[in-house]
Image (cartoon, rainbow, N blue to C red):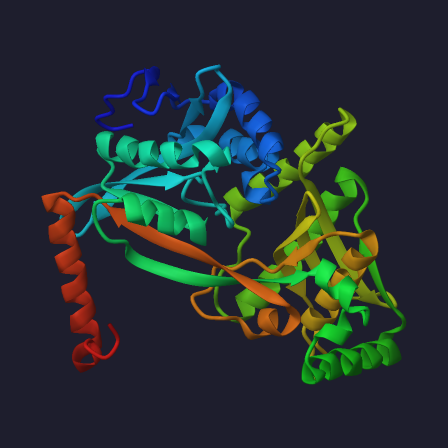
Length: 394
């Protein structure tokens, strides 16, 4: 970490001990046991904080990202907080700027429902130290990527300055327990319009191609093959729009390694994260594929590949999600989370969900002269772009 005055182990005023694990390929070897223990002790259900997810991105990108980790311990030596940091040095305008990402390399794969992993009784002390630590190490901007509403507000209230460029995103989800309690099945909790579109689309698919079936890949080899099929469908859609999809070389390598890790951990009798690739077909005709992360009863919908057709009445996304959610209900799972990342509410996610949470992507600039000047330049650039509408859009 640039200009870091940190020592390997420091006793804090709160009575906690902060252990600093320096950047390098063996970061997880040192932080892994504490992370796993704390993940289990807190009953955390975010796939993006699971040991499997964090270990995989550190293995793939940790050295390249210069990742380092912090473990906070109580007086008895028990871990009470964990966080991985990744500094990124770049330029903003005329300035060299160091940005520090929380629990992500800052490229290739990004987390959602991101947080500082803590025991509740020590959370305030840990977050106080996170802010002090970032400022002491010369960070120009703390990058909050996909953080929960709670963490956004907690860090912003402690930070000596205002959040810059913050984007709030909805993370719609289906409360499967609520659907079960309602007693009318999943379609029964949807609006009449959404329900009608799904039923009509299902009838049309069945008439044209055959019965609708949802299958989940079995074993790592089939899951890897189905991931390749999903990527082909996904990229075909995005390339038709003249854009790139979500599976660049780095991202694809990460997901393949995550699937392989899942197989190894299940063989050992462990595993905190399940990777599921689902295929929805009508007869032999694949209409959609879904990539899910399943963590402690919570399903995170990560990516998809759909086959769109000229007939707009055929809704591969609505049908695929509906069948997947109904399967999750039968399995007794607790939640189907569509995740976020979009600055505006996404209509199809909202139409299929029962509830929504808030996630944030934001920067916390250090209270330095450099960052104040940079913020003035950013605001001036924004006003220049929007012209007379600047006052109305503040």
